[in-house]
Length: 242
Image (cartoon, rainbow, N blue to C red; front, top):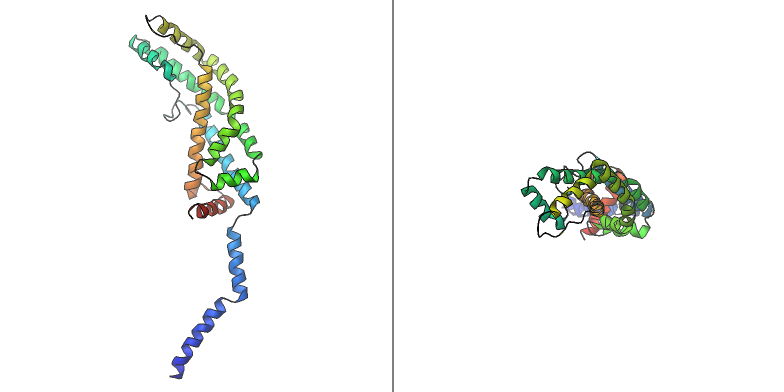
């Protein structure tokens, strides 16, 4: 009977020893290690964004980066698609194909110039910017880039697109297509200027790919390639699930 009475006391000793001031301090210290500092949050997010933007730029600037990707492939402008259909019916399908290929080649030429623009935007992020992005919606980073880089991308891309369109013959092909279509009776004339449209579509394609990369890093633990990324995005996962 005495032995039985001693068991509860022994159990109580074990429980109380598990919560000594030293163990509580250790538990708090371990918890603190899981919470990233502001500096870690900033560095991790900048790592992730640079990784995502560089990868997107590299993919799209490669041969067939635009042309071979159905999600970003540049086609005739919406207002010219009726003209394209008419031209193909008139046996000018090859001319239309040349226009589409050259538009995409121009976008691929321009995409390589996006990296320094994105990297500069990342360098100028404030702590508020990175925190809002980390704990914000799934496309927070993409929206940040849209707001901060679209103007510079347009200025940078436009002359590159124009030069590339000239180089690969797109300006001539599209002008030829416009002239051929304009000969069709009772149709509205095509706008022969294609560079502004190609520039905007090239920028849209970049943001589309960046959004995919952002979602991949947020959702795919395997895409968090460094311990810092793993720590910070795990912290974000827990906060967003609350």
